[in-house]
Length: 278
Image: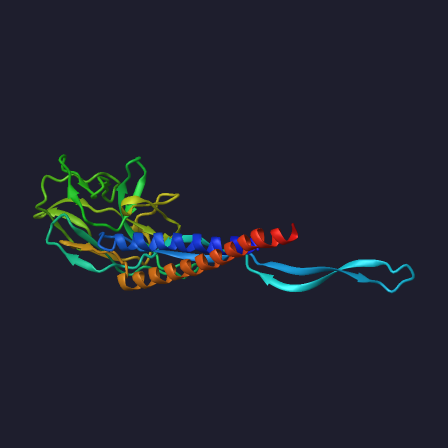
């Protein structure tokens, strides 16, 4: 009986967490560069049940030994094992702002170990001084003239230095060179992740790596380009996300009904069976 409580309860917790994840995806459907999160739900190891019974051995003293009569396997519940961003390219939206620069994926090699493509990111200076990475090219110039993200992180150039510009009247070439007329001001720094699933996702669309990512220009077979006056939208599929939210809600509701049924059975056992035995 109590195993049923734990199984239904773990299912409710897993579906609640999945609903929260999907709600966050929907809330960021219009956030530039946002990468939708995916979840994987796994079951706990199954428990093999057997009926313990006494078996008589045909000897003179009628010796008895305990035997096992197999019943079958019993699920012990589910849990959300992990969440993982989906790094596919989002649609490009034109803004006509010179500080909006979309990073467009080109040829990205497939990792033979995982079967997934690598990913390119803008290189940033995080608030704690560490390297941070993002796909959000919705930049701006702060009062000191530095190119920053909406959350205030500094955009770094190809040499790992902050990019300081006199004004926003600049041009960005397809290969990431910032120019004022014919004068080169800086080159945007781009990093490449062979296995982006290992990156740690934090607030404001930022990703962090355990080790600093290499320069994308040093990676063999990697290509990308830039489009000034555009931003990459999120890759959230709103229709599918709404459908998944309804599915998660129904699964939560089904587990809830099972839990309520177990609760009524326990209440009946305490109030009625206990009174008869008394």
